[in-house]
Image 1 (cartoon, rainbow, N blue to C red):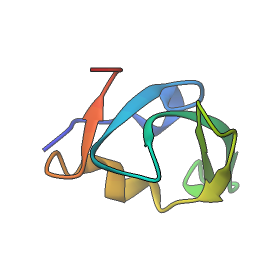
Image 2: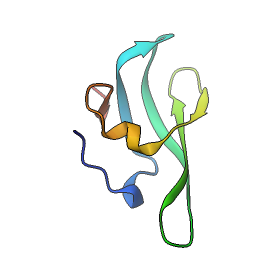
Image 3: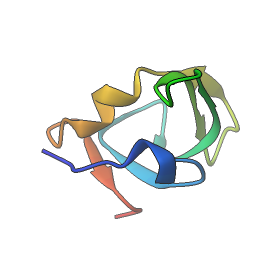
Image 4: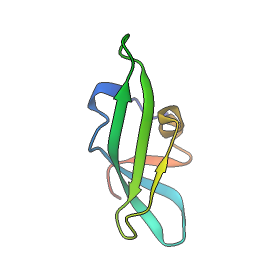
Length: 71
């Protein structure tokens, strides 16, 4: 399980354990927080294709799918 501080998530680097469409390395490019400081939006961008998608940031905690940093 990856330990994540949501306030430090912006611009963090991630590696997909099982890459799809040759997209292995990703960056967190956008984050939005509500009034209480809870994450309400997180956007992940593939480095090679520049494709972006919204993601539940809690999914990044699963080390079976995501590794912190570029490996």
